[in-house]
Length: 538
Image (cartoon, rainbow, N blue to C red):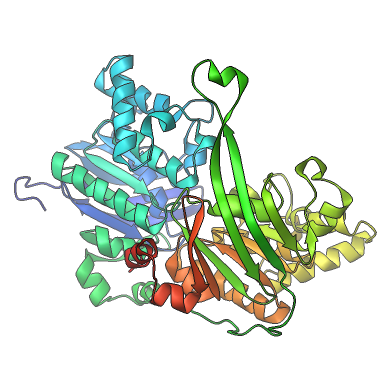
């Protein structure tokens, strides 16, 4: 506690949150001092986010009891009008998924300047300039150009940084940060943590950090509180809790680091590659300023001169910072955007984008499937489990009878560890009825059901807590051993690459700057950029 402030900034006492008959937060007590960084950790569904949301009256129709004193006022007793004055001013919040939190119809600069106009009474010109400065302070390159961009025109990491800039616009006394670095690579995590630490020193801001990243907690927080099934089971200084965890649940979280369990050698080292690319180049058109833009477009080179080769049963890890070209490479390999150079999947090439839905391309898509980063947004909320998982079969094997289709769906679900004994009425359920890890298993089942040879895994575990991450990685490792699957693993998590990859590509500014075996690249990197990435993950 700050010696100059005898009372904590926040005092939460006997907090209970209930949805109907289900109590999701049970008797939680904690304090946050001015300028202090408290981390709230626990698995998905442990009540971390609901605890934070309830402080600002954002827990929907939940029944909230207890008290939450903030600067002498009980937040749980304020009217909605009074809370609107607190939200975004004295207390700001950064949400986990920036694409759903940002307005898709407004530029990011305008969204930030709107906060400044409202909370700091700046003019439109002053707020726009301040918004650009805030964007620059979060490490986004070309801040003036990015301020004029819409959320969909930024990478995932850039969107997250823009949302953090918006939350910090009013210089709040307390920042509620719900997984603020989930979408960021390891070096950018360090930049964001450094930014938050600088702002704390300048303003005395406190932070309640909700995260499943234990490395981040160790590096950033002063104290940590551990939640399990709605209750706080342990809290104290980070060094004490991490050094000698007293509760069994805390010890289990500490032990949940990704483990390597892969077949080190390909089953047939002379087998033809399942994927290869040569001189791969992707260019996006960009507007030119002034009269020149009327007659021609500029170009932004997102990927330049990429070569790769992947054999069956092996994993190629692709790492790099946000905006390095990882996702562009994945989309080119999947035949989802125009490219120059060559891509071969199981000996076949993609037809031109104009013929994207041609029969040859459709047959090729059966051989290469994708698992996306966010299983909630990648699964249609309007389709049942049976419809989601069976969708690929209805396209690629239209001759199956309904009984055969259902049998294949049940087999694919069982292969990823989901069955009727665990989830009665499984096939008729919808994605929102499952946890994050279970939804990712559904996404894997959907990809596997068409019997592909190659999976593109785009950050498949970044949205999951450490224990669920470990389970999903173990599932992917088992499926690779049993099926001989090849994986292209796009990730910013060096620990995941260590656990999964046989070979590694390191990307920076659209160029592969280093490649080789996972052992060589991660244990003895040659390039300074790679060395910085590995060091940031320690």
